[in-house]
Length: 109
Image (tube, one colour):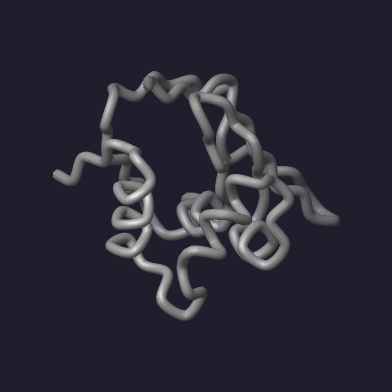
């Protein structure tokens, strides 16, 4: 499954000004890609990592702030995933183990 990012935009607005941090970014990621975000302080890295998209069979089924999605998952696949992992122990290793146990192919690099 290939992941695509299409026409991403992010603007921060204050009382005095608007700053466009990201403008019309589109990317194609190869299968099994590991994605990292690198940038200077204030380059929106932390803001980007506060959001999650749940993808099932190539379709985005749920998006939102990580805290909101994990606290109140709306999609069945998200609820099932979280119910099988003790919330205090959510880690990359436990997530990979859960996915592998449920028939998903996971590639670690």
